[in-house]
Image (tube, rainbow over the protein chains, first blue to last red):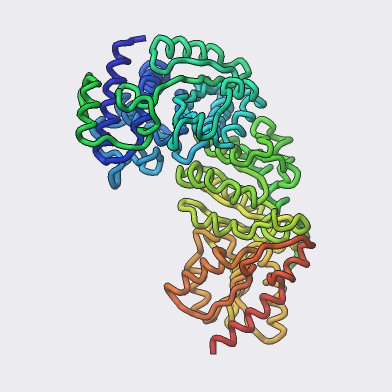
Length: 280
Length: 317
């Protein structure tokens, strides 16, 4: 693991996120900042993919689905830095005719995206379909997903969770962004998830936990998760994160879930995040 | 009119036979079912292609998402459940993961409309054509009989993109030739005529055939079109026929709101405004009863087509 590369990438991704949402005064910075470390790791250390020759079928490649599509800024930034499309295109986010729609979509043909997401709770089912497709194709590569914790309030997630263990889907690694916050407040207050680890275990999944801001822990947990694939059980990682991670005044609250910083706030935030690769 | 009845079967069995044939001929075809394998007649596919059959349980939302995901990797998924659970229950899953994402999923829906019968209104969906034809990228097909449902099932596998295929439960006469070629978006001309055009889909095609025989006994010349594809609609067939007859009756086992009749009227108002009468269910839920009792009570029977034709011809003058 090249930890310096990861740290630099994540810092630049966080700058991109803030500048993207600021430019259009809309979007979701909180969860995006919280998942910058994980997605940087996934794309720069973990997954096998061919960003220069994107195909919808992704045969022979690991596949990632972002189920909580509202954190599109972090995904777009990571995809651009991974070579799927020019980094300069990040400046079109949420603007008319852009390939970078408010929530990820396939209809404008942005390389790297295989399924629309935004309406919550659908990504796990989609991933199970692709996992089945990979098995039918004798493709040994894996399917990764990311979900919000609030998203787990959607019933479809649990339909999919039940299916996966009952049918021994063991080529999938799902991760929950467990930041404990959603639009209306703390998840505990809005609709408590209860004992999340016990719930997934009861649904027949192998459960791992990690700190989503510690690259050593992410590295060790992902390695363990991959070693557990192919053994007849689906795997979920409950990833502890902080919404707004990296910007002090955005942390510790749900308030930056879907609000863009103003000019002054942007400047304050960018001062906390070194430009490493260079701004788009 | 003379029409040869080739037998009597349910359209869902046509789907089952078509799917089984696809299982034998196209290795990319996979099937998913939400605990209704027998009702959907998917048993043969399940038996012959067990590794390509996915029993998802009573979890339709997950089924639609999985089907969408299976297309990534080149599979052609056919989902099977009742029409109610194929559409209304999973509209958002279809909208985002299938239609908007342009996935090659075939949504196969049985027990559509009133002719599901005794189960009653909870299961008798009459809004599904409307919901599905509103979705961009969606093709909507309502075949008329057993043979046509089999042919349509095979045809949609070769069509790239999302499709809604609607069929039903009751045993009905078979009149489409077993070797007929099914072309998506191209209406079947059953009989040419000059006084009135009847455009029907699904089970109402047979009811319209019966109606034509009654109308002909009254000396009326009827042009009958089987509009098996609701979207994309065969606009040329409609305009060509109506420019000759000058009036039209549409007939469907669906709500008047959102159905075939509304699609046809949109074409006519824009291009060739003529009198139109609608045979369909008028803003009402169904109830328990036999299929034929329900068709009579809710105004989608043979006599309703006859009455509508007489009325629309009178309006021409």
